Image (cartoon, rainbow over all chains, first blue to last red; front, side, top):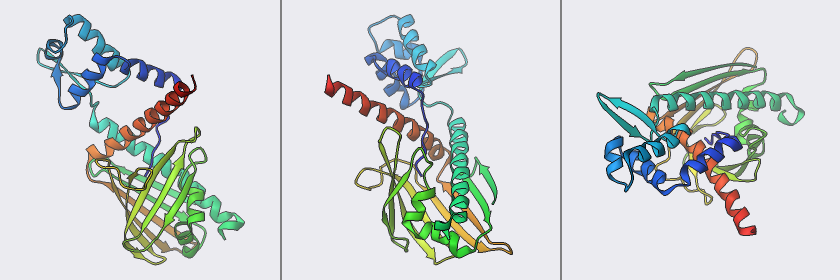
Length: 114
Length: 161
């Protein structure tokens, strides 16, 4: 089933801005495979810890990554809470079906459906 | 028309039960007739076009939905079982422009059941994903589609300049 999530122009702009930087794209790629601490990430780039932190913050703002605390360590992952996303997916599917059933009823009531 | 929708997160399952004041045969036609199916499957903003329709065991139903920008999003049903006029079972997934299933994308099992009632018909649709992770991917897919559409627009603009 095709479900569409409509992003507003402003949201798409923010997403593109977030992904318009090579370091940020690399952070997303690396954290897809598993959580990484900000310090581990910082080791990978020729820039300061603070600069990497700023990049992470930009990605976090548009929801491309989330930060998870493990004890003293702050880890980054690019997969926001699976359960939350699944719940939203179910909500969207339910909404899609609400529309479908209404259209089915309308079609049955129309002369063509008969 | 009466509608109840049950969302089961742990089972990654959506159950839709709808009653109609029309006979079962008419409701069956909404699936069996591709021209009727495309009238209700997609919302008015993303109308569906059914390009292949073989509602028999082993058959395939292919469709695409068109975004307001004209972008096409393809889907397909692989039909596993059909009880003519009473129900059918399909696997519903994301397809590419050639109608092939996209690897790694979630596929849901859809079981449709139609029954006669005193006043018409009851339709039950149970859509089940393999896991909560798969269900979550449906949402990501939507986001990727939005991104893909925007990318396409960007390319078009760049090609013009």
